[in-house]
Amino acid sequence: MELRIKELLKEKGVMHKELAERLGVTDIALRASLKGNPTIGTLEKVANVLGVAVPELFAAPKEGAITCPHCGKSITIKAE
Image 1 (cartoon, rainbow, N blue to C red):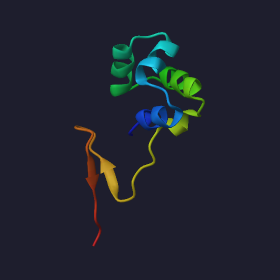
Image 2: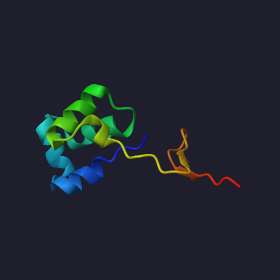
Image 3: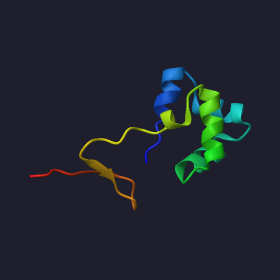
């Protein structure tokens, strides 16, 4: 599932580095933890700093599209 943290940061006017500082970690450490499989604890902390609920950190699945579990790219599916 795709995270929409970049979108939320832009909406809130917060830079990624500032988010990392508020969480007490380096920017690199935050990017690494969010890139892979972040823990619920990390997601809760990020959501708290951004003032949103954890589910809001996730992008809504696009209808007719799935995400490749290997590479993470979106795959569009058309039914005929």
